[in-house]
Amino acid sequence: MRTTWLPPPAVTFLCAWAMWGLAGAPAWSDLLIGPQNWGWSQRVGVMVWCVALSLMVLALSAMLAMRTTPNPMAPEQATALVQTGLFSVSRNPIYVADAMVLMGWAAWLANGLALLVLPVFVGYITIMQIRAEEQALSAVFGDDYHAYCQRVRRWV
Image (cartoon, rainbow, N blue to C red):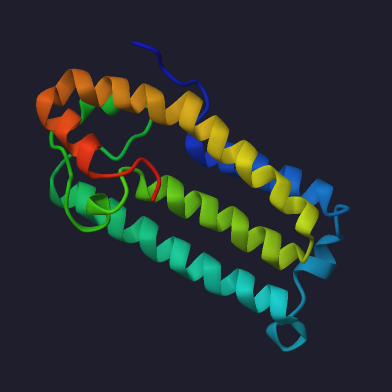
């Protein structure tokens, strides 16, 4: 079974860093201005981050309620196949939330060029992380997992 070597939060961070560089690496003082000085893009960015954080908390809560591992580096340790809540809409709601974090960051940076990193993130996570998870979950849950994959899309 193929395993991943870079945790998804690290991939998200590296993509955010690349977005910052594409946006011309604005000074940290420019990024940390108070809310009274925020423009529309910073407000949109914060709203998207709030939605993303909510998705992450809901997905993690569903996994913990089923007493299964949320560790993306050890999907073979899953003890339950979560199919309810957000997992009935997306097989990977936490990765959807990670992508939303990057969308919010691009909005915050107010630089469309930063959005070029988003498809790189989606492609990398799909090929290097999600496919390994799918292989592990298929081995653990078999036909139940295959039926779930037929009903629910990988992303949204």
